[in-house]
Amino acid sequence: MTSPEEQLQRYRASIDNIDAVLIHTLAERFKLTQAVGELKAVHGMPPSDPGRESLQIARLRQLAEDADLDPEFAEKFITFVIAEVIHHHERIASGGAEA
Image (cartoon, rainbow, N blue to C red; front, side, top):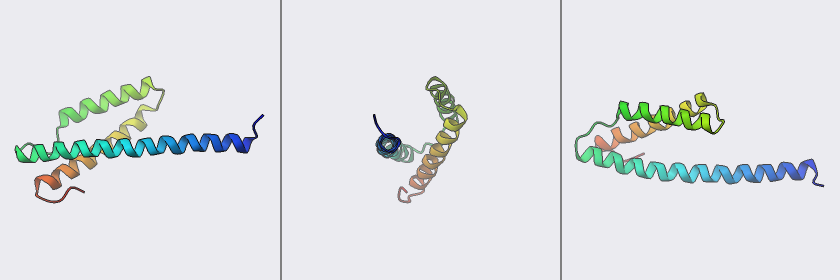
C-alpha cells in the first residue's frame, strides 16, 4: 500500500508532466501564430479577425464542456492567448520584432 506522501508525489509528477506538455504546446501554437502574423503583414491583412476569434471562443467553450472543464475558465484562457497573438501581430505589422 502506498503512503499518502508517495501518492502525493505521483500526482505532482503527473502534474509536472502535464505542465511541460502545456508549455511546449503553447510554444508551438505561438510559432504558428507568428507565421500567421507575418503572412498578414505581408498581405496588408488586419492583425485581428473578430469573426474567427468569436468562433474559436465558442469552439473552446464547447470543448471545455465536453472535457468537464469550466467553460468560463476556458474562455478566459483563450481570450488571454488571443490578446497576446493580436499584440504580436500588431508588432509584426508595424515592423517591430515579434515578442
